[in-house]
Image (cartoon, rainbow, N blue to C red; front, side, top):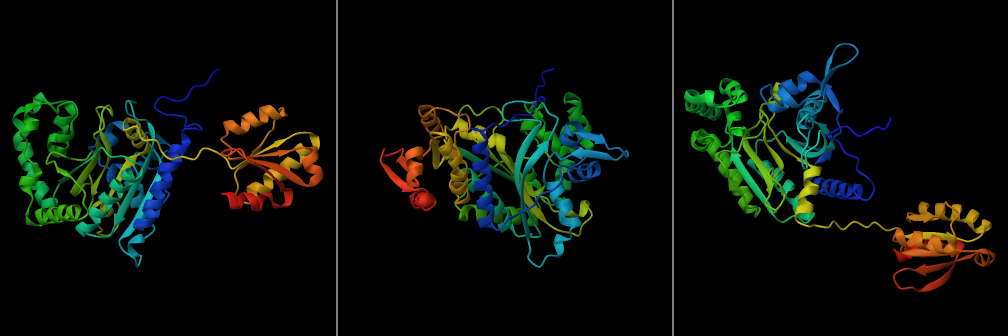
Length: 422
C-alpha cells in the first residue's frame, strides 16, 4: 500500500525548509530586541478552553476545530490558534504576579483547522504570534503592530498595507450591537443561515461573512466608529498617534472585524498588495482582547497580540519575487583517495565539525572526479584533497573554490586555518 500525505498538509523538504528557518530566525531576533520571550504550549488542549477563549459563535469553533475524545472520554482539541493556549498558561502559571509587567510572549508552532485547502492555507499550518499581557497603554498596541510590520520589512517585503479599526469597549459595542440588529433584522432572511444565527448572538460577525459580503446592507451597515464613547475614541486616537510617530502608514477601515470573539478596542490586519498574491490578501491579524484573561479564569488583565501564518508569509515573498539571503553552501569538503585517506577523513571531518566548521565527505566510495563534483553540488567554499602522498606528509591539499588557489596545510592545523578563512 502506498501512503499519501493527508489533504491540507505538506512535507517541507530540504531546499525549502531553509526559507522557513530564515523567517523563524528573524522572528526570534526581532522578539529579542523587543523583549518578547518564547513560550511553548501543548499542541492539544481541553476543548472548553477554545469554546470559551475563541468564542462559540466563531467559524473556528463551529466548523473548523479538530476535536476528539481521549480514552477517558474527555473532549480534546488540536489548537486552532495560539492566543487561548498562551493566556491559559499565563493564568495557570500565575504570570500576572511577575514583577515585570507587561508579560511579553511569543510562540512559533503548528495550528490545526479543518477548512478547505487553498493557496497559502492548510489544515496544519505554522503560526508565529506575540502576546503582551498586563498593559492598557495604547503605546503597547503600536509596539505590537510595529513588531509585525518590522518582521515583514526586514525580510524584504515592500507591498504591505496596514488596516486598522477600533471595536470599542463593552459600552460602545453594546450600542453598536443594537444598531446592527436594527439594521439587519428586517431583511435577515436574505442572508445565509450563519448570519441569521449571528444576528442575536454576535451581529458584528455578520460584517465578516464571506458569503454575503456583497449584499447591499453590508455597504451601509452602522460603523463601530460612529458608536465609540469618549474613552474608546480617545484610546483609538492615541494608537493612531503612536503609529504616526513611528512612521507606520495605515488605513482606517470601520468595517474591519476579526474572526475571533475576544477582540475589543484595537483590531488590525496586515495585507499584501502584491500583484498575483491571490484573493485572500491578509498576512497577519490581531488586536486587543481585554477580558479574555478573566474569561479563562484569571484576574482582570488587559492584553493585545497578533498572529501570522508562515505559509502566507512565504507566498507573499514569492509574489514580490524576494529571494532570501540563505547560505546553502558548506565550508569544507574532504575528497579522499585511497583506503587510508578514507579512514583518516572520518576523524578529520569530525575535527572540523567540532570546531564549528560545516564539513562533509564521501560515503559512496566515489572516484576523485565524482567527489569533486559532489563538492561543487554542495557549494563547498574549500575542498581538501587527501591522498597517500599528503598523509605521508601529515598534510592536506586545500583548494579555494572561489579563487582556484591551492596550498598545502598540516592536518593538525587545518581547523585553525579554516577558522581564519571564515
